[in-house]
Image (tube, rainbow, N blue to C red; front, side, top):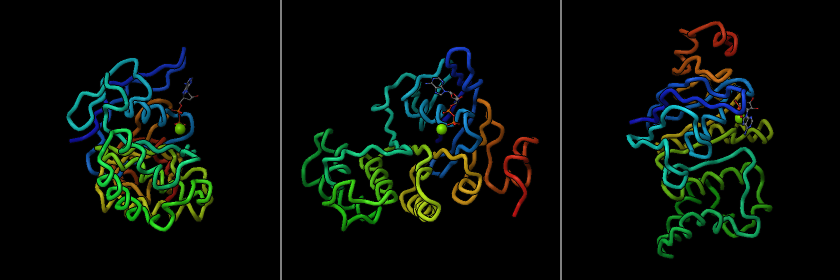
Length: 237
Ligand code: ADP
Ligand code: MG
């Protein structure tokens, strides 16, 4: 199983954001979409999420043709860089939101939310409002919320981009450990080579609307597909 992107093209007016992209993102792994700003990473992620419609091509998620499915039918969880929580709801209610709108039984919601808050280490903050959390804690809440409905795929767009270096590093390690616990297929966007190399199992290098290479961090170092990948990853330090 996998996420299959087949001949996906996307234009904004005359500008080609994605140019006939085909890539197979493996299941159960932590995959980074890595590349310079403006390369089309977010556009590709949004097309996988169903938030943007491709002009051409096909998107298959775990064996299901999702090309024409709306976001809510794709079973994906989504976390953005600037996370918009419900400001007037507690952490608990924010995490419960997706379950409540699906009318899940109250006791089921409560135990599932307890489990999620424990997973992201926010048990003691359950009754706080989002404004009373640090930036890193808010992103952890966002992740718990995305995981609440048991998505088959978790999509993160520069989830730690807005945070300071120390918190970024902590969250990075934490995402790695979380993934090792839940094994949900996870795709995250980053322009930070170090972040991708340290955290991801697989890296998809994207530049100017094209996939330059996909491989493990070792693959990219040992056998960079071209000059661009070699230059972008930089010297081994
Ligand atoms: P990345 O995430 O790699 O930085 P994006 O996917 O956000 O890149 O954007 C790729 C290119 O497409 C950029 O040049 C951006 O300006 C352009 N673009 C993205 N979304 C839109 C849009 N809604 N309208 C017009 N241009 C867009
Ligand atoms: Mg982006």
